[in-house]
Image 1 (spheres, rainbow, N blue to C red):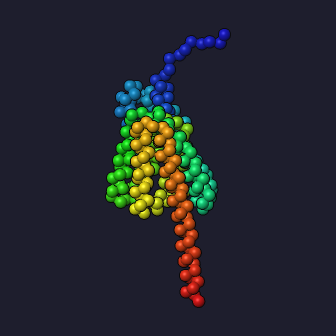
Image 2: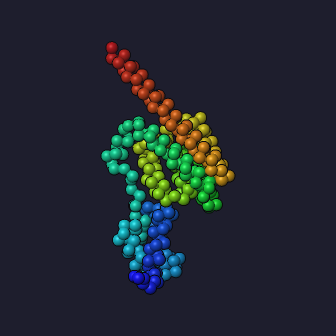
Image 3: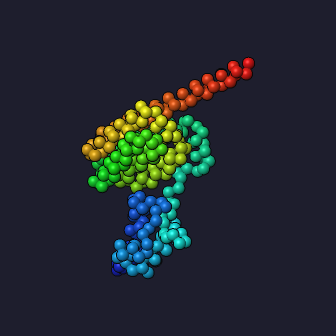
Amino acid sequence: MPFEKVQPEKLSQSVVRQIELLILRGILRPGERLPSERELSERLGVSRPSLREALAELQDGGLLASRAGAGVYVADVLGSAFSDALVRLFSTHDEAVFDYITFRRDMEGLAAERAATYGSDTDLKVIDAIFTKMEAAHSKRNPKDEAALDADFHLSIIEASHNVIMLHMMRSMFQLLREGVFYNRQVMFKQRTTRDMLLDQHRAMNTAIQARDPAAARAAVEAHLTFVEIAMTDQKKADRNEAIARKRFENETRR
């Protein structure tokens, strides 16, 4: 039978496998700089030649990129889930906005359920820390920071779900959200009442996850994104009514 003796794995291959797993699990993020060669070799307990061999293999595989005089970075393996043409199409059609919210409600509800079940104590501390920052930004009435932290909060829940496919897919989609392709988050934070309600909704999500209550965590996320959908619908109607009123006024002033 074609059995062969098991060969000990080269040190460089052990390094490659470890860094690959860190990228796969989202611990090392696109654009993140790796420690210096000296520090990394000490942390991994390997010689510099073995480390260089591993880094070269990872660069050849497109997972790492070397920048002259700046070090080695995780390559932009994330990219966009969609082509530029499709992104432009999304940005000009309301249907895409609401389908995106529906998709998020389904996926993030599952992520919150999983985070409450499978998230480590460290995962839950990260979620709680981001929510604390959201409260601070809310008190300072800083819509820009609050909107950015809102995205970070949702992504921290997805990271705590411990599903690598969901993690990388949603990170890619959240980048489009940050860029305002699907809707402008900052617009939603302008109204004081809306801002207060959004903060309360995130508090409910955090509370349920910290209590490790999967059903409540999922329900809180779904209620939040249903609120977002209704708020966006109302905003679109208000924008249309304002445009109609402006057009009517312009026509009357020309007479």
